[in-house]
View 1 (tube, helix red, strand yellow):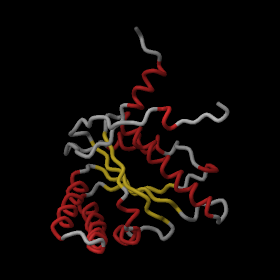
View 2 (spheres, rainbow, N blue to C red; view 1 turned 45 degrees about the vertical axis):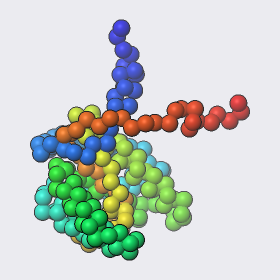
View 3 (cartoon, rainbow, N blue to C red; view 1 turned 90 degrees about the vertical axis):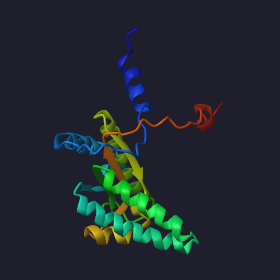
Length: 202
C-alpha cells in the first residue's frame, strides 16, 4: 500500500534521534547552508527572529571554547563536592565530544531584540531560539545528518562570550553538534499521548 505524503512525513519527524557519536567526515558547505537557510524559517514570537548563531568548524576555535566551558565546569563541579577524578573524566569527555563533532552551532538570544522590556518578552525570545534549534535539527536530519542539543554554554555565558568575543547583546543559550552519525541510537521511551494531552470540556 502506498503511503500518503503526510504519513511519510510523520514517520520522518518521529525518526529523528539525538546523535552523540559522529564520523570524521566533514559536512559539505552546501549542505550546511541548506540547513541554516531552513533554520531561519522557524517561528518566533512577534516574528522578531531573536536568534543569532555562531558557526564553529575550525578545530582551534572549538578547542578554545571547549577549554573555556570545561574550566567553568571544573569550578562548578568542585563547588558541588565532586571528586577530582570524576571532574577530570567529565572534562575530558566534553572536550572529546567538541573535538569530534564536525560542526558546532552556538545558539544565542540577542537581548536587544524585544518588542518591549518585560520578562514575558524575554521568555518568548528564549522559546523562539529553542524553536529555531529544533528547526535546525530537523533540517540536519533531512540531510542524513545527526545532531544533539547541549546546554553547556547556558551555564557559562560569560566564558563563552569571552572565548568567542561575542557581541555584548548575544546571550548564549545552547549548542548543537552536527555531523554524519557514527551510531544508531535506540529510540528512548515516550510518554503516551493520553499522559500529556488534556482536552478541556470532556
